[in-house]
Length: 440
Ligand SMILES: CSC[C@H]1O[C@@H](n2cnc3c(O)ncnc32)[C@H](O)[C@@H]1O
Ligand SMILES: [Zn+2]
Image 1 (cartoon, rainbow, N blue to C red):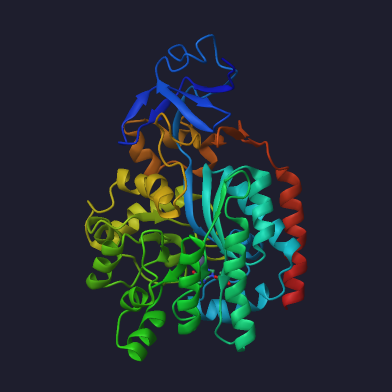
Image 2 (spheres, protein in one colour):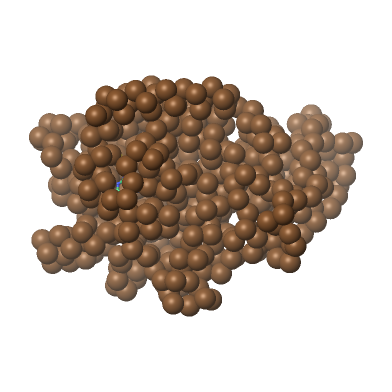
């Protein structure tokens, strides 16, 4: 029988139940899936029994599912450090949107590649992205080898009707055209920016069109009080009640933030099986508030983690979000038992895959071969009483040794194999300088 196997050998493995076992992981590179997990995964296998075709050394390491960054604007790496220390509205209106108005397609490609290199180097294998110039983001994902659910973000406020309609149309067209690109690693969604930045009739049109196209909806929701209050005043209902009325709440929908949600809204999210992407660093930096993450999880809502864009974070290392989610969850709940380590790890892996409706998130036979190998040698990881605790509280993105997606090694021994990281950083630096010069 022909074989094309990769053995991730000699490490410890994080199981879907968040136990840690000594095991190898045998990958079928043709299908991009895991064939077996176990002490003798290759020897016991009918195809790889005579030896795997390739090996990836995981000795001294912990093999974990590739992390899922479920909400970002990947090309915003070009605006990292451009505007800080402002609340969301002022930050967007005074700095970010004027700068984004100058973005070219080539800028977005460069910013996307920079963000993707950063994510691969910190163990992320899938991300959810809302932005402009989506074809360039798709090209970057295709070249880099990870997975993404992407979409064109729609903002209709401040636009005349033809322009606003064209923006909605673009989101739908892009979602239809690119769904399944990059050998299925790219999936799409229709992405109204938020409930206050897309006008009611166009929001309804976007929801209906997404349903017709069979793709999910992704939006920002309940991020700040300034966003929630006008909805309550104008409509006499909470944002999630409005979202339910518009038809936006559905099993495939994933909403970023969910900071200011009351109990009734949490029940609505749970009843519709709508996922929330928690972005703790962005919420802290913009002083948006503390999301009731433990309450959401207790109600049965799928919670995923996201970095948001690099201008409100300011990096795309999801290990930071893991730690922030666990810590901020405790502070918000006034309970040190809230968001325990395994819960935070679940959000960064299984929760992300579920929210984005993408493969991955678990290391088990039959699952997508999306994983990262974390080095456990560093001083800040000694001693190793509890490796799940380490994942939540102590591991840094720079501890990731290898990253694998769809059975393909994207980073080996910290060298990104699919993109030229030096060129990517240099190009992004130049483009960021030119962009800012145009914007000022
Ligand atoms: C229309 S494309 C996406 C749009 O969202 C902006 N953005 C970045 N971070 C946030 C955030 O935390 N809340 C709302 N909007 C955000 C980004 O700059 C793009 O313009
Ligand atoms: Zn965002």
